[in-house]
Image 1 (cartoon, one colour):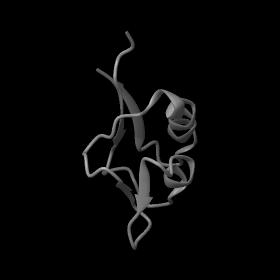
Image 2: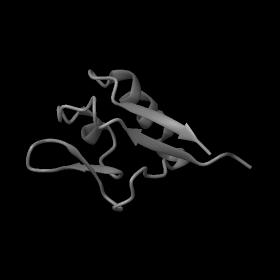
Image 3: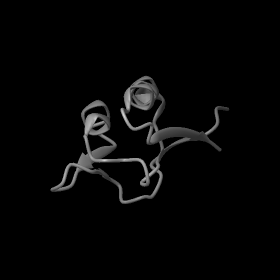
Image 4: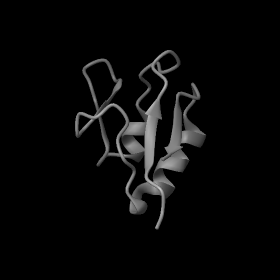
Length: 72
């Protein structure tokens, strides 16, 4: 059984560039200023197995290092 993985956004680092929303369109959308908004309304959305590679890419490419993947 695999552990749940959740996407964490460090809001003190995020500046709304929106790259994460392009890589994870099923998980995130943008607000009017470009900041990510979790589609399901949760604070740290679960990352589905099929989206894990895209989530890891978003973490690596975030220019402000505002993303991380948490394992539970």
